Image (cartoon, rainbow, N blue to C red; front, side, top):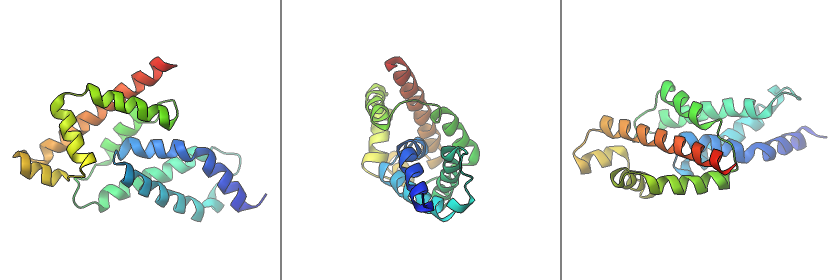
Length: 169
């Protein structure tokens, strides 16, 4: 088999899992898709460095992690997430089992369980694509306060999703 076929076979096998991993750290679906595309490009460029027979997903996930960090560094309208926050989210999100469809169904259920204020914050931030800076100006809260609240909400949602998926098994 050619190198191109090997890459496509491995990437397609792990594509959804890799996207789910990225989505745990970048909850905006469109941005997560962009990071997945950038990750795929790097994976293809560096595929000659991949050792056949080793865990492709682990290798791809590390590259995705760098791309997520790069995403947060480049987004000037977002508060930058430091490596410790990404590691915390990653530690919670990575072990979650289940397909992306199951995860999305679980996420919808978990969103409906949020406190109404938190649900409104998530809706405004991600469904209306409002930046934390704009949210802060509209709510008379600091960007730092909103950032901390969003990290808390991410954690609550990740725990809820994990519990929901485990209960479904």
